[in-house]
Length: 218
Ligand SMILES: O=C([O-])CC(=O)C(=O)O
Ligand SMILES: [Mg+2]
Image 1 (cartoon, helix red, strand yellow):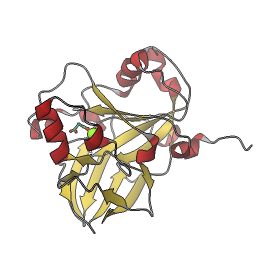
Image 2 (cartoon, rainbow, N blue to C red):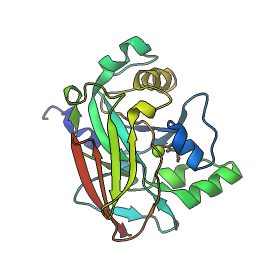
Image 3 (cartoon, rainbow, N blue to C red):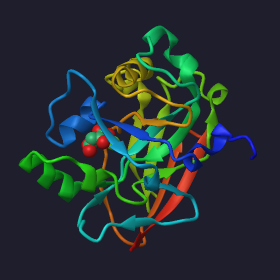
């Protein structure tokens, strides 16, 4: 069997750990408190979708939101990784969208139910090509942007994150061991908004990597 290449991590079937409310301006726009500790949830590997395939609207959702996020690709396994060693566990990065069925999430929140239906459906994690670590020397200060039908909707910097990448790696790995090929979604800046069938989403990590997706009904 050919050796697996972390550059195609989305084919490995590894977990996607997502951080919510990691930007104060996004927490506020949805009326949420700024958290004292990271808010975590998971997406299954079946959530991945790659350029060329559409983002599918779940049949039970009437308000699908985009959330542009920096993805951190794990290159070395670890449990309870100290912050000082955290960056040694990073292989690289990816541009990701945390597609969210916002109406469903609001219902889950008001009933105290988990977010699985809102966050973990098929195609809820559009992902770019792998970006080697060396291409982003300072992941804590890089621009993330997203346009819908050419209109700029999200334009933020990872410098606005509440919890840094080393902190997140340490915090997550204390609870959930990280493995090679895992992906961490680090949260979204403000500007989330709803998308419809046929909309075109274009996003980028500065000009290091860009990607384009269309929205389709199932
Ligand atoms: O659903 C939310 O707003 C939480 C989240 O994923 C984020 O902040 O990136
Ligand atoms: Mg998110």
